[in-house]
Image (tube, rainbow, N blue to C red; front, side, top):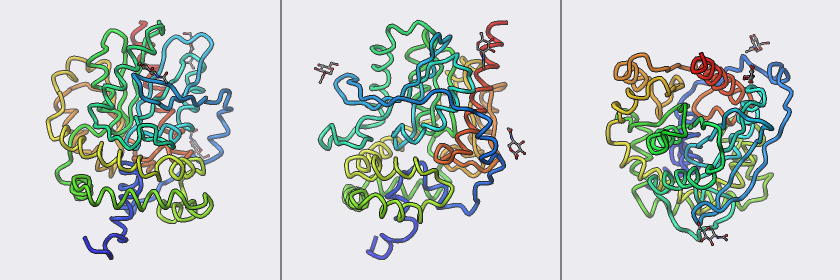
Length: 347
Ligand SMILES: *[C@@H]1O[C@H](CO)[C@@H](O)[C@H](O)[C@H]1NC(C)=O
Ligand SMILES: *[C@@H]1O[C@H](CO)[C@@H](O)[C@H](O)[C@H]1NC(C)=O
Ligand SMILES: *[C@@H]1O[C@H](CO)[C@@H](O)[C@H](O)[C@H]1NC(C)=O
């Protein structure tokens, strides 16, 4: 790669969140906001999420929590890569409201995908991030008596299925949003990211550039970020990007995790497990999403007949949680899946 191509749109897009951005950069489709602000005002947000730092098996971990007074279940949300939970605040607050205060919600960030470099540069693989979530459930959810519903985005959908496999007695339902479950061999974006993530030198270079951008005054980096990302991003998503993602340690960890994702997800998805649990699993796909492509959607329908799979065709994209309209649309979809599941299992 020469110095010119480092600043090409492709390379620049890789400085930014992998799973969020590439779809946007590589596609000319633009979000089509049929559900504009007028719909948002239909929901009067009653409760705000609290953010807290928690020690999970020795690692400082960002949690976002919304507690219901008398919950009948608990939603545990697993983010994609980057695993920065503040990207999902709008989505999770809307989901809380749509569930009518019947559920508490917790979102858990990935280790070292954070504003501060708590782990002093250490890199964490996909497997380590999965183990981290499993021990979180084992320890922190010990006293939670209500059933758990897992909701995961992108690689978080894969992680959720892995948690489901290990904590079957506690989990009653698992929802994967824009799921990354298998390497997409026909995607040129993925092959670029894969090659990049495998190169120590390029990872260090990109992380340095991203880290420098993050050190710029917030207003300046905000302008640069908006230029690349487009106008549909909410201002809170831009702030999350500048404070948590544009950090040397976060980008290194994103790329390292991505490398290990490509290794692990070269295997076929565990169809047998999905068939066994098909009444407790649901997926939402997007159009034109190379992480969760429509051929995977077709494959799931073939391999797991009668599974609950849907396709979002409103143009909200893989990075749904970065816009208010996308957050609301997906929250409505998830809430209706959960309500249906609960009423079916009660009847
Ligand atoms: C959102 O608002 C648009 C425009 O007012 C309307 O056409 C649409 O039906 C609304 N959607 C929902 C889910 O309320
Ligand atoms: C974090 O938890 C681990 C055990 O999981 C414990 O050994 C360690 O002392 C804790 N650290 C802090 C700062 O509380
Ligand atoms: C909350 O739970 C109650 C009792 O189970 C139920 O009647 C109500 O419809 C639920 N609300 C929502 C928004 O799901």
